[in-house]
Image 1 (cartoon, rainbow over the protein chains, first blue to last red):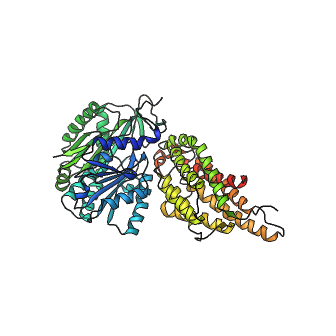
Image 2: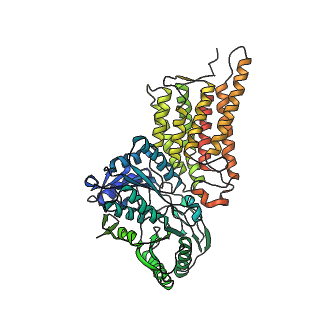
Image 3: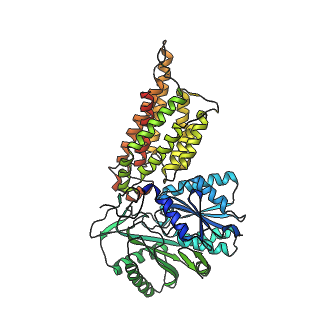
Length: 333
Length: 229
């Protein structure tokens, strides 16, 4: 199928989307050279700061969460591609306000290579940076092999928790510890019903049959798990909730965060219908949703499907999740 | 008298790099198509960007010596935003520069081998991928091994010859190119263990790894550039 997208020269996608994003949010963020999006209040920060890296094409992620209480800088690569280690190093230097920087990297081949090469430069320069990897896709590896798990939407609440702890004046070690505890207790499962087109090439990523869905799609809909006949919202919700509860060993009486993240072409109508069943099913199991989000945080163009995210919560994590933040796509008073 | 075919200088290296970047650009759409099967379909886009950097740097090569040029080229390639390929290629090209002396103006066969061995070592430092994991290492490892074997052979032959040396650089590059191509082709028989394709597991059998293919094209371009000079 021919790609139908509003764009100009495909080579300018990242540049133009970032320019538009910065113009639309000029009171909150600033676009610096080398595609670094910076929290406008960073110059006044006297605390630990939080930086991340990742490809474009997943809007509002990742830069949509740059602002007070979440990310201080996001280093943006080209469409679905990691930025350079040089740009990341520059962003870390820029973000360091003397209290150290938490550097959040999603577990994808390119991002990890860039993250590791950046840390080499960090070590040479003697910067105070701690790297945290988010890897929570339960579809492509068991929990024992967490290093093989992809980083999906879980990076977003991780930024929030880390940003909350940083704003509370915690040290870098403390911010890292609380964010890592959250990351160790989170899990995501994704389902795809229709693939996306790569906006630079127009090629379709992962084609699915008319009546098929795939549980365990990757960030870009690349294959990962079971293809099966299309199911109803209620059936799909139950399959996914069961898988996440099992992976996290969550028992009756526990408190969780639940996020339904639309992949780009699945409607809010569908997400609410799925959420309704999740809430009822969890209540039946005596598991309490203490934090939630339903909407688009991290998308993949016009891919249809969603990511279901779950995390075990405690009072401290909940406090940081609920702490104030002011970013283009997440605001808490 | 025949031109000396046992040494490689700035002019020749430039010719080789330009041919390699031309070939990479020519094949970039095929690389994207290959990547679309189990990756996200943009490997050719990244390779095109890397080729543009090689092209631009090689064409505009000023006074920089071999070492400085290759070091800067590696940094520039690493600066390309393009997933795993850019840091890998940047590390590879930067690795070539390491064994060179600052003032080096010529590369003889043993030095050429040291350069490629160094590039391989640098790559091993940043990726855990081993032979058979369906990555660009499946092209790189056999290429460097074959170049090494060919170098040993060429040196021996040249010692035995009285009048002039044979084209040992050309033979070494050809050996690397052919081994890289075979290695890339062999990835069709492997199950992906790295990158996005690894999630498709056994389904990746029968499809070559785009990263191995693109690196083999680089070797082919270097050899063709030398052969055509």
